[in-house]
Length: 193
Image 1 (cartoon, rainbow, N blue to C red):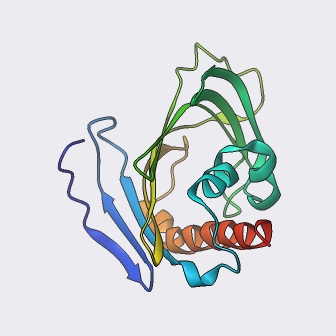
Image 2 (cartoon, rainbow, N blue to C red):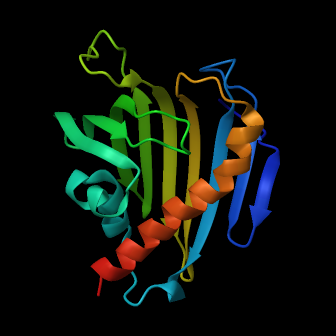
């Protein structure tokens, strides 16, 4: 996915959402990029990147603020910085049923920048014994900071196994991203008080 061009579809304040119609991983699904900037003055006590990562990766912490999740657990610890996780989402936008994801995830912290990569594992490795539809995705998250701001650069391609017009997804995407990060930042602000 080198040199991907992402045309901007939404931009306001501290958020920019871009979209490309396909990727090398999947030629029939769009891939979205969200770039978020959060000023450190927002926080009563500025969190470290380690705290920010823990609020995303640690199931106990994540379930406290991310109400989109019905279940979130580490299924298998692979190495120090990698694991297989299982996520079941709650019903979304009143038309998307609960979805199940199994993902292999690896995190790397280097030079004060955090990289998180996650992709679905083949269903034959973790068979679906539930009534949930199995969805697949590819995620890349980069968290970095300077003296004034935190920066999040998220790339995501998801196959939720549903037939919804892209216009519907795009029209709801900005609200979903804003809600997700609002809850995340609120939790971090409370956590560090």
